[in-house]
Structures are given as structure tokens and as C-alpha cells.
Length: 148
Image 1 (tube, rainbow, N blue to C red):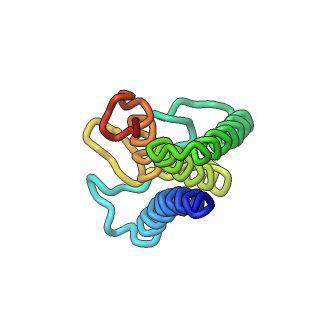
Image 2 (image 1 turned 45 degrees about the horizontal axis):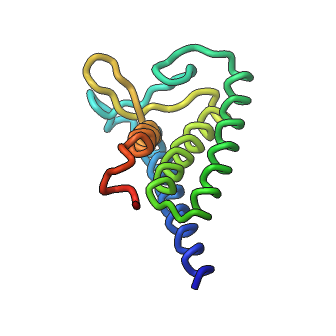
């Protein structure tokens, strides 16, 4: 029974992780393949900096990304052992978004943003997953979303 519970948590993590990754890469593929559908809100742009287009050296950024992803994987495995479902969701969203954006960065040299809000805010599905993962992780400990 214990082994079955552990597999359920792993499957849940993999579902969210790959769902985030596939959704983000699919939206980017659609934006690249069909540029005629882009408009005010749906627009393909490239971001060579980090969050909010802050410039940083490419090699340093790649090293930082690999280290962050490595530590997130370690923390995620520990959460699975403790069966903390909300932490597993957080890590799956963070890793799914981080890996998807890292794939862009390694393949294209920049992250592709697919959505634009008024005021120049550019983002993609992976960015949303990362922000939601961080917000859920910071959610108050006595929340109904966290197990007691």
C-alpha cells in the first residue's frame, strides 16, 4: 500500500510537470507556426534576459538555471517522501515552467514570450506556472490547501 501511495504522488507530479511543459511548448509552437493569429494579446517575442528582461551574461545564466533546477528536484523528491501534496504541486509547476523556459534558452538563446498585456508586460505559460508555484508555496501554512 505504501508503494502505491508513493507512485500516486510521482504520477501526480509527472502529470503536472509534463502538462505545464507540453502546454507552454505547444502555445509557443502555435505562435511560431501561425504568426497571422498574433495580435494585441497573443504576440511572439523573445526575451534574452531573465525575469522582466533583466540582462545577464548567457553562460552565467545557464549555470544558475541548472543549479536551481537541480535543487528544486532534490526538494521535490523530499516532499514526495513526506507526501506533501501542495509542495509537490508547487515543485511540479516550478520545474515544468523552468524546464520549458530553459529549453527555449538553450535551443534559441532566448525565452519566447507569447502573451502581451497593456503596459508592455510580456509572459508565457511557463511564467504563469512559475508564479502560481511560488504563490502556492508562500500560501499561509494554516490554509485549507495545506494538509495539517
